[in-house]
Structure formats: structure tokens, C-alpha cells
Length: 101
Image (cartoon, rainbow, N blue to C red; front, side, top):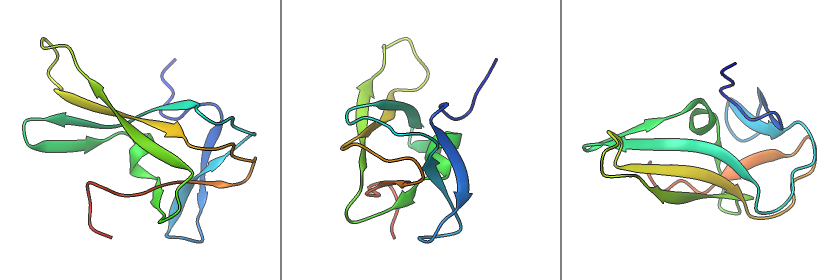
């Protein structure tokens, strides 16, 4: 069954902006939460995970670039990795690098 978000994450109202991603359970440092963005040509696409994450100057996660196989249509992919332990109820944040804030 397709799940747009990992089991440990939910979407709720954010104090940062509109809706955000929140830990539904404690999440350990260095956890790969899944793919946030894909690039085809000059266009960057957000996944559901990437679409709800809010910016922070002191983020608890970071995007890690994955190198795609030369046969894949998406030449670049990024996954979201936790930089620290995140407690249940805490908002999951990222420092934006693709968009102006």
C-alpha cells in the first residue's frame, strides 16, 4: 500500500507557517525519513514529504542528495535525514536551499 509519509510523521498546524510535519513518535538521529525532492531537467518536484516541511535557521533535519542511475528519468533525488533525536510532537524542519524564504 502506498504511504506518502513515513509512519513516524504526520501533518499538523504549524507555528512556523500554515501546516508542517511533526514527529508522531520519537525519531532517532540519522533516520532516513524518505525522499523530499526529485529533479528532471531543470524542474524540481516536491514529494508529499517535501511539500509540508517548514524552513528553520536551526533545522533538525537535512536534505542528502542521492545520485540516480543514468537510466532513471530523475537525475537527482534528495532524502530527508534527521540531524538529531526528534521527540514525539516536535516539528520536523529543514533549512531551505531550493526556495527563497
